[in-house]
Image 1 (cartoon, rainbow, N blue to C red):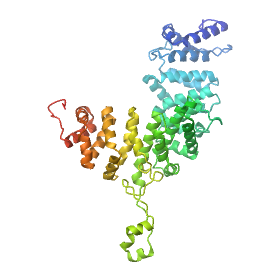
Image 2: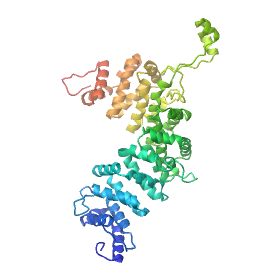
Image 3: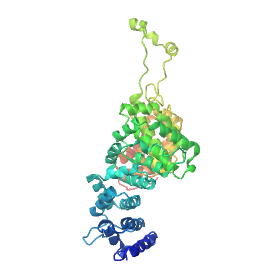
Image 4: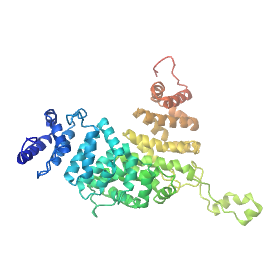
Length: 496
């Protein structure tokens, strides 16, 4: 009926197929009946100039319904020439239609098709190739500015999916688009209601490569950070239950803030991080959220900031008095003199004057205990990000002896030993073992006693020694030797 009927018959047939295809269990039957080839012909080849119905829109909707059902599509042919649905032929045609179309419903359906194709590695590779070779990225990014809400949402969802493959290209072109990137943050309404468009917009900015300096500077110059911080506070006060999109929105906003911590070598961004005290912001978010992703992002942000502390922490500047300049008398530097002149206290770990605001010091920000609390989390990614942040306090550039002492005061080693017991991921074990070795070497008898008394640790160490990667295996061996618990190398297992 679609292929040979008159306009009235075709319209009725399209309507029936749209209804049938929206019921996902029918997809396989429709595919076997050849519907994909017919819809592809309608979209890419057929030309009917005097038909009032937009058959391309109808065909795209039906094809999108079928692909969204989850049917295996890589091997489906779309025409007699052997082109498959994952081929350049299909993707080029869809991109071309998007570029030239003015029909919002058609555009939405075309994007739905592309979103389905991105779920297959083969199809995704084709889409990435086409995006790199053509102006498809401009076409998709320009759809962000559309007044049609659902079309804008669909376009951004597709861009989010593409961000991990062509993120730098998208970021560069986003910054060349009128009104971007700031319009992705600026509120569409004056109400406190969080829309899906706002949520996916924030997520898109967060998912673009974090170290893209062009985008980070564009966001800085458009002064979006005060808006982001204001929105975060608003969500925290009202709670994420006020909108079903609030959780995704909050994760996106925090993800944008983390972007800046990856490019702190840029003086303007370093100044921004200090001015808005991002260390305190992330510290507060660690415990004032129910979102695992927000906790992971906050810990990651603290890690990036803490890595800069040793460079930013400097000894206090002592103004020389005339007497000092003339005679260089050391008595003027006595403790009573220092007290009178209000010489700031030095950070025991970073060996200079520290604060959460100016040097991003985790100790001054009271972030350590919150990070340790996150080590008890069930989510592996939250635990690993928190471990990575704490590891910055045991870096060779800081005073490791003082760090171990401070961490011991808050019972850090027990939290770390618990991570080894509860998790078996390579990354978690590598970081945990690295920290345990630091405590063994620098923590004295108390740390050595706590570690040696853990009954489950040796078995985990031996497992890592036999099955871990090179780095994890080496650290595990170091600890086992330190504890005098090295297994017999002639055996492939270790019995307690």
